[in-house]
Image (cartoon, rainbow, N blue to C red; front, side):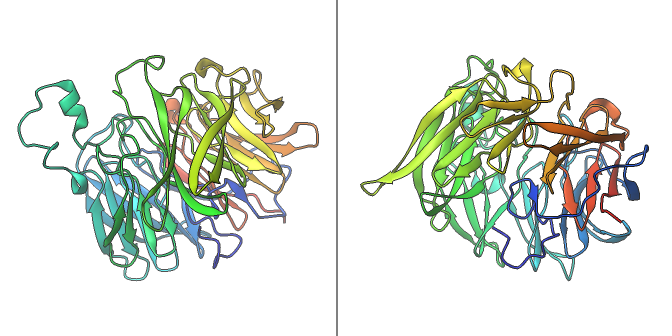
Length: 439
């Protein structure tokens, strides 16, 4: 985790200081003018879905220049002024082109993962690349990744490759390690030394990266630090109902050893939302394509770890964005077309039972959301409208809404960031900073 030396207002990685989607900030606006919260600045960005990270008053976003380069951009939080950039060649074209991940920022370095698998460590002072790795090419195996053309589909799929929609993950930092998930036929996760890029360990198989878009997730279960990974092992062309269960794997972050394995109790074709720790020994998982939601109980018995499914329900089914735990309740953007009984932004308890839902009347498509000060900031991913909800004892109250982004193409899907009372949002053309502080 990155909490030890941070100011409370920093948002230095995907889903914030603790990767929970919850901010500790207080004193935020509970009413907006008709046009929405004050726009502090706006900058043009390339197409993509990569959200912002913020540390020490600096905003970091991984952008993309055409189909040629990835570029890390550093902006001033208060003004949006460009401070510096760092670019590298990354030619190629993907469906839904552009960046996909959020940078991870510590005291000295920024770590980025590009859509074609480039892992970079960039110095915050010199603005230069310290070390580089490639999450596909570096783990090719001579027995599998031969030069000749594959003879069968199975042989083709066994080879290391960029996923269908690009590499979509943000690195996790643990002690002096940078942890990512190559997800090849033989190597699951990899741990690199932060300062040098030296490979410290590589775990065994955890599933493949073809249609898996989950980041490694650090959590403490049963009194031990663990990195939990969710991935799909099967042929990506299979229908959702014909796909096998997704694989859930726990890795020891110090050694890369596998602690336990489990699987989803139903087919789960494309894992995207992150697993969520909801207790000392429990993990909540939700996904689309008919999975719904489930809870795993993790325990160590007789020196051996095991994980068992406590329940699976159709209450909620998230497609893209990760669930958030706040004051003992779980919040999920849920979709009936993915098999959920409840839709919109849905609140469930830790047993998966419905508390309230905004649907079917109030929907948010694939927009991101975060929680702060008893409020939920949630974007409509189709229209670019930002909504402000207040969490009440028995439900929610819609306090305000405003169209803050153009929402071109209906793909305003990037995660939000909040730092020093400034909310960072983006669509396919621009990134904006909105002032949501009380005067």
